[in-house]
Length: 627
Image (cartoon, rainbow, N blue to C red; front, side, top):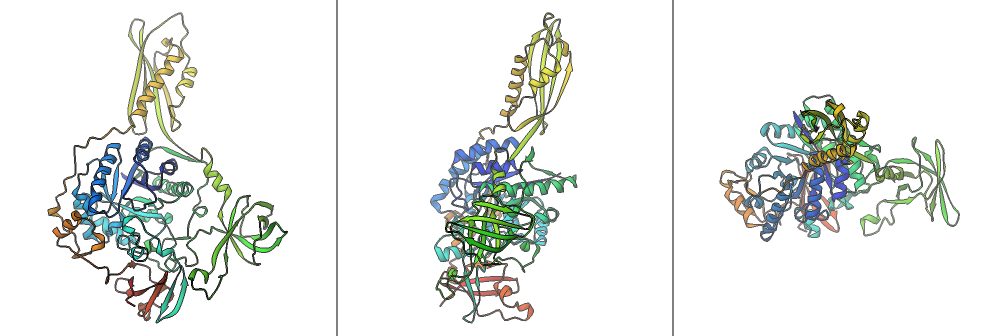
């Protein structure tokens, strides 16, 4: 049976717990150092606490160690790896080849990060030989490319991004952040240059300005079955910097989608256990997004970018009819876009005209997103509503309003029991005769994992005492051992009429059994006595050259040199960004349609980059201008 894994992000322990309660099969989280999101780090005690909670549901914990490392950092990386193994972490997400010179315990699965840029079958086979068991696919891969990977290496588990922010550049070889801000994406410090306003020019004349490289957010909820058919078994939600609301909402959405698919296919099952009950209605439109696209997977490049803004504006809720200001508050009357209701505290957004068309800063010459909070809903009719806003808000008639804070939805996610995940178990109480009036009361348990436990006590039948009645026993045995467990079925067997015990002793037996069961989920401290044996003489990196900026330690250098891969200083002549998305195709004319693709440039943050179209491979590249 194919095990499917919904892999959710977590910036901290609390976010991870929310994701698990909403149905995640695995969590990926950053440790104290060396994660590709430097601002999403966690101390070891937090990781240890997460492992303990996650393993109750057989949820796996993947820890990121996916940055390039300097020589002196390899020692620290070894210490972290040992600590992760001891506390029961399930997998390491890695990038740097230098890590294969370390002693890595076999209890840790090794997953290749998308930062490894595994974009060919030859690279996939290289990492398989190193012992990698799961590969994070490039975001720009199509279904056909995924199928080719699965056919080439059927034992490798494929992990695909299905939700969240998209990188416009190919991960692992994007240098534009390093070029402009001296912040390396391969060191966890991407400055998100693609989310800045910029100008596209042709022969020095402006073609378009705006957020030209800001891709919409990824959403593959309608392509999950196709991804499964293509060979994907792990479905990854991006967002280790996102808040709990986002993570809970996205996890709940995709968990429900996977469950509905599994219901129609008996060959599929979820990797983890436990039934999830939601006390909110999942809705991806209500938490952060830049509007959605599935264009990279489906190879539809027409609607990949949201060049108006990289911010979350929310769904459209109406158009302004009129506004009035009374010296303290503004009353905004709008025609509602659909059947919806407003609430005090809702956040509304709108696009404001440019501040100065002739300003030097690009951001001042294009429309911007503005917003306000609704202090009081004065009226909320079928087609119109009037909202009171503190202060003065200038809105022209016909201004389109959006809602990026739905306060009722946010409150539903903040309630104490917004989601509950439960492990079910069955109990059997049996009374058996040992000899004469000596009896044994045995309480046995079997859980969803088919784990079996039992506890018993011996007693002497006392004819002067009334035996316990079934209802009283059932009431006692139905008490929970944890808020995350629930008795599914209780059965009785044997000579129940001989059970002349105090109910407190039966309750003590229940506590003993449930404690024994729950303690079985505790991850034992793993011994560091069995390690991977990496024979680096039998693997060859399948590229003739590699950028020196991607090799920061002597051990990685040695591995590349053993593979006859030349490490070159490509700072000056190599491109800073390679993308499946093409600015010339979007705002000019593709060469395949007879267009001229030369003499384009892109101005970002006052610096100019040459736009070069690799039409044969349908890729766009940005090069540092020599001017």
